[in-house]
Image (cartoon, rainbow over all chains, first blue to last red; front, side):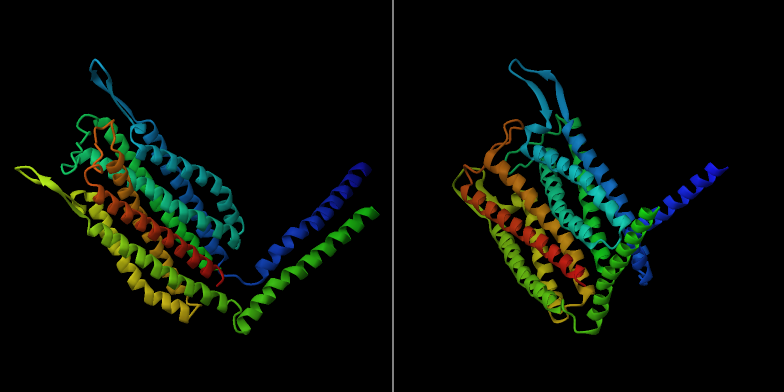
Length: 207
Length: 207
């Protein structure tokens, strides 16, 4: 009985010291909550939406990278000298596309912790500004990848009679289909990046 | 037991000093609103820089549009059936380039009054947010135009042996040179747009 009491006392002591220790970080929070801040809830909502959008963009960018990176079509006939084969690294633009979308995926993974910081501390304007700067650069980056590949895909589908560039999609149908899908995924990623920039701007404004 | 108490006291002291420190920024906010804003000067400087950058972007976008729009090269020899001639509308991507850069130029002209509003009233967050939204869309737009044309120009310079697309720049040297210049001008415009977005974000943050 006595020993139980002493452990009880110890527990209380620990709790007391814990609450004393815990005061240091929480005091800040208390002050934050003491001053009426009506925008806290909205900001947290925006931050959570930002996190969800970031995961969507990650899925789109990864899908674009993998779809483009695995394009490889071999035609079922061949001549004496070579076999007809098409893969993404036949065209430098498609190689750039894979690299750019892989970089975008990597950036999105690295940005997730910062997005979580913005959820936990909705008033951390520094993290938000950092995300906005990099998101803006990534808008340009993913759009450049998607647009340049779209120009080449268009050429592959339709050819151009003025320059004597012939359409190759009659022969490499599967290749063209896969590449077109990757371009669409990359455009989706870049549109999501635009929304991320706008979200960050709105969150910064309500500061 | 005594030592626990002393740490408790220390913790409380730290908490007290923290709360005293924590008050400093909130008092600042109150002062900020009472006295004429100390950030007003910085914001006005940012707004003037924004205006200057906008004019630079306008010059770059107009240069890109006009350079691309006036490309027209006729080769000095011709066959019985047709004359060899290259102009921007032989390739749909270049037509898109001209349209996109013309739209960007038009937007930049229309945005100048809003930029002036931001100089006159540095705290008008609405106008600034509006500019930021459209600037972000225009980043994607001009980058898409520049990147897709860059992909085609690269092809025109180097050709691609895998797809049997031959380089046309041996014949149409002047055409290729003019088109490359236009692409560079468009890339400059899109970089300036990125800076405009970042400037607006910084200005919104200091609100």
